[in-house]
Length: 529
Ligand code: FAD
Ligand code: NAP
Image 1 (cartoon, rainbow, N blue to C red):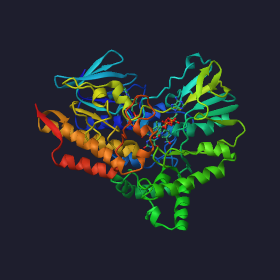
Image 2: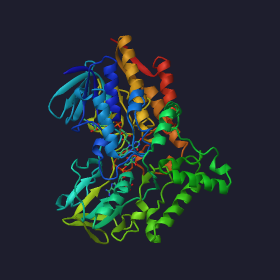
Image 3: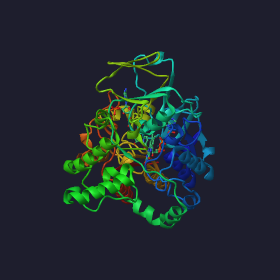
Image 4: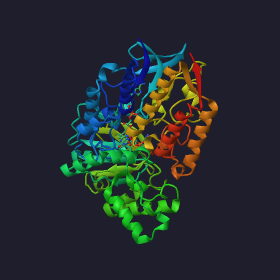
């Protein structure tokens, strides 16, 4: 099969890329490993999975009628509702017919001006452009713990939760991993389990998320304000309409500061990590917010030793992805829940009937792995595209990802990678982010058609300059103080530790994309047909 554009992935980015390709009159085929659409929201269907950006912002903005017709029921949408939304989008814009589901892309190479893609079904597809909407949190990290194969109970991964929700009532459950996924799933499993052991290697900061159903008045107000809300988000630092407190922490007196922190704490969720404008760049400002959050943990958790174990000691607040929860800290006040600090007693092995650490054995009927992802680069390096001169992505990125604008890679012409390294990605509202990146790629593809270009490829110097800029933007923040973060690839053995997302802000990033396009795609080699 031969088309203009091949799109890998059917999440927010992939569906929009297929839609835009069709709109531009291009022939397109989508390839998706899952049996259906949804991406993240197809795979991560564990109990408690929920968005941490408000539903009305974490949704497409490209079609006003879609925005008006769809009604979100809650402030922070749960996984089933987001999946239902993406199902609706796929049907509404008739996108499914372009997809091959249950099909994995195994490899891709650029031959005679076209991308040739090998799939798990044995078929080969060729396209002029390869649009990789493969996701930044889609390549699952499955730790190789000694003895796991011999475990006789059930094993689940939050990131590949079964479609048929397993009945875990009355079981002895062990959860490994305390990032956002673990923190969301733990309170719910605690209610179902006979006993729950939480195996924590690193604690994370988590902020309670006061979720509630949107009232009719809320929805009416949101509908009226939607245009302004979207306008405010379009060039905002994180792609949402919310800003920081109007004064820096270090320029605000203590009582007013406490009021601002309480207001953000009660409002809940990820925004706490940006209460003050200087919080993610000045350590003293960060300390103020961090100590406030740590006091809340000590207030909620009754056992002071457990509270202490739940408080991170290795990073400023917000420099690893801040988590959001519904009753996480309270869960550790339950009689059937136990926290095991793996820093004190590492896992020695999984036995036939549970987990044995250096100190004790913990019998389990069920093990739940919430152990994260080979984030940002993993889905792309697993495909490992090869360019016309033999450049391989895994080699180009061996010392850390090199990109032009977090969208293109030198040596790999006509290839776009969305939501990946070098773009704001996980630091922004990723739905608007996907729209912006896909629009930019499609506009370039259309320009290539009009100008008779066969190939578009970033210059090495332009990609090096952008990659250096990504590093400089991170260096201006406190992010590099969290050396154990997946933002730096620290969770994957052997992965080069480089801060991967662009920390310069979504709005600035977007302005840069606009500028490059307006300047006739400066930084790219444009090869005529
Ligand atoms: P994905 O949704 O990850 O889709 C990628 C798709 O590509 C997948 O379906 C995958 O199967 C497919 N694919 C990958 N490789 C191949 C291959 N080789 N062959 C075939 N198919 C392939 N972001 C936020 O902004 N706010 C949130 O609240 C938020 N919550 C999240 C909660 C969870 C549990 C997770 C894991 C992530 C969350 N994110 C959140 C980030 C989320 O990943 C993005 O918001 C967004 O959904 C990504 O969309 P995408 O289309 O770029 O990628
Ligand atoms: P994660 O943040 O990487 O957390 C993985 C957890 O597993 C960490 O606690 C990690 O410990 C632990 N772990 C990994 N390997 C281990 C091993 N071999 N032994 C013991 N522990 C191990 O992954 P995640 O929780 O899936 O979240 C990833 C990202 O997805 C989030 O940061 C967020 O961007 C997104 N997400 C968002 C939401 C939401 O609220 N909307 C929900 C889920 C996910 P270390 O820290 O020590 O490596």
